[in-house]
Image 1 (cartoon, rainbow, N blue to C red):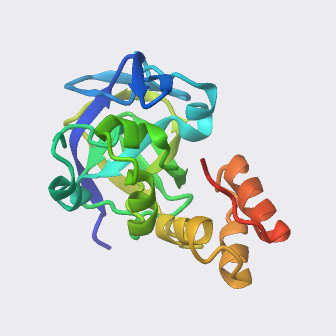
Image 2: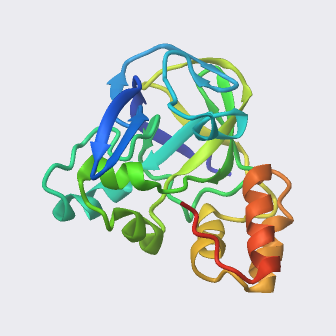
Length: 222
């Protein structure tokens, strides 16, 4: 069987800064810069990379990945679009899109072992970064969210490493399907059950999708 591996365009880190968006004043490390490494990847993320809020980090959200494949889609829409860490991601990867990545898939990256845990949830900070209020809705509608990973084995990684799929998840629930259940086909019992039966889905998202389905009320996913 041909080994599936994916090239890193960049490995990105950032420091927390203060930003203004309308009347909002907020702290964020969404503006990240590429680093050559090697960098130590711990259970909670890249050493030296900052998070402004606790719910933006943690073991189920240690790394944020965004596919470089989507960059061209966004460029025509925004005047100040950048070509590095466009969506504040830690890892910019070629070829590994939301339809190809599955919850629970395990990859090697340098010395580390990482696992897909949930889609990245677009928040207002993306809209603020590009001064485009509709960006959150656009990301949801396209499904071009990127996704988050947990660290199963810590180790040194660099931008020269490749992500190598070493254990595909048997249930094959794609990040794209989880996005569909989150944002669009929210009350489809077959899809919801399929997503919720993947034990590797992060506990917080499992709970939120279950609550949304059982309540019959749309979650705002703010």
